[in-house]
Length: 356
Ligand code: ADP
Ligand code: DP6
Ligand code: CO
Image (cartoon, rainbow, N blue to C red; front, side, top):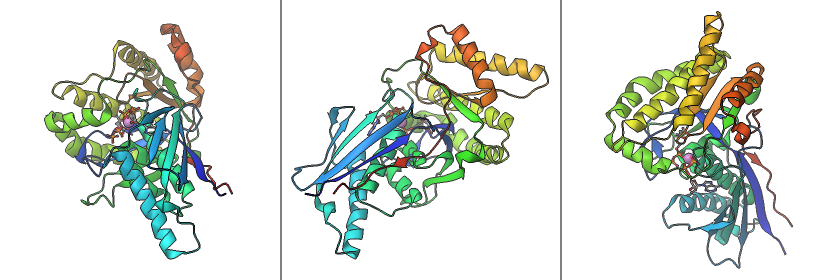
């Protein structure tokens, strides 16, 4: 008997220029382009196994061991449908291929870090889902094409199909065909940058990214300013800084954009607060750390950024990481919660194969 099953895993990515706002909620087309770093170590990953079998009665999905409903017309259903359609195209071209696109799939996914806590679980989750189905269906599809499908699961997921420094180009077309992820630079280009993840609170956040950003689009005048007058310049400037390995500029823009994203959340009605007092205290610490460095005639040594949650991600050159960890442990004695700091970055790894 042939078992059609494949496993893939994908890491999270943490944005330096934040995606926040959709111009099309169904296709998940963003109001602005964004740029992120894909984390490389195994601390923040989703691992997903997909199986197709003629005996299955329906498509089903388990997240961290608990079954999640696959709603008709919802994001999970869309990603599964798109992947089956690609398999069907292959089968139509090559009649020797088993017709597994007709089978229902059972999918099991696990995150090795807090889910829905502002550490980008939807990004690694949908990237791993699409990667596991691509492996199951033995698709020759490019990463960019897969990113277009992952995007329809969760916008930020499109960026986790690539390693290193990744941009999600917002695109112009109404059908979303040009709204996809592209590599700005591979991880090898700038391996010196590390990410320190500070888990301030691992509980599920009060306002999901999806509903929070929709409310922002509907109510925030600041978002309109951000989209038109801020993000395009920042995208160009940070891409240039990455290519030049200019940490000072990279750090400055990353912190500015985190601040503006949280300002936009505050400008939403009713306001959304993703950071808490500990998050703000970590900002103060990094600001002071940088101030002392600059006062001594040096450059910025670290950059903080916060997604839609209270947890800090600190980007810094490797030589500064030890010092930053010591500072954090000194001022936040509960810091045993902090994940192993020495994270680099990498791509969604497809390890799946069909087992005969
Ligand atoms: P986060 O900040 O963690 O990305 P979001 O509010 O954006 O939080 O999304 C969380 C949602 O993403 C979860 O409630 C779940 O629906 C989905 N999700 C998270 N992990 C996975 C996964 N491994 N596989 C499929 N879906 C996932
Ligand atoms: C703050 O991709 O989680 O992390 O597309 O609705 O699933 P949906 O939202 P999601 O939003 C991520 C927002 C962010 C910034 C970013 O990752 O760019
Ligand atoms: Co998310």
